Amino acid sequence: MSSQEDIALLIKTIQYRHHRRLDAALADLGISLVQWNALREIARNPGASMHALAEATFNSDQGFGTLAKRLLDAGLILRRQGNGRALTHDLTEEGRRLLDQGALRYKTTIDDAFRALSAEQLLDLQNALMKLT
Image (cartoon, rainbow, N blue to C red; front, side, top):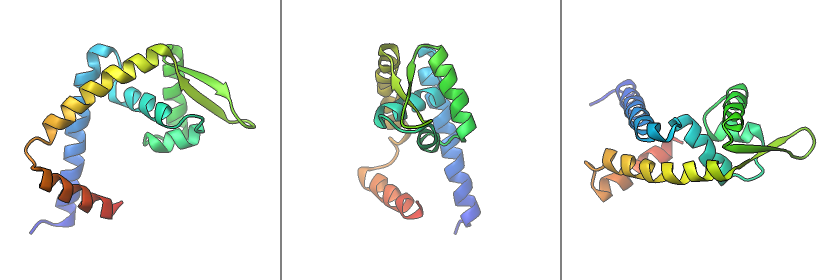
């Protein structure tokens, strides 16, 4: 029987491998997985605060601010004044194009990564992980 530490390490190893594979799949688009994920969360959460986007992308507030600045400088997002001092973000046409092209690569890469599991095993894994979140 595996220890909880072993299971936690396996989860981290899988996450690390997925991140590397996804970075490689997105590389010729000129964006990283971290950047693509930020584009995805901006698209999914219109009008969200920088803090909410930081949480959705697993970044600190400062880390997301730096990431958003790079995306802004690259012409992939627009920044607007929200309520009070809050800033909101939207995708530019180029940001939307990269998000869409990246989504196809993301799906292909993830499908390949989970190919060894049956539909039932995937559902069991999802249910187990959901209990932990």
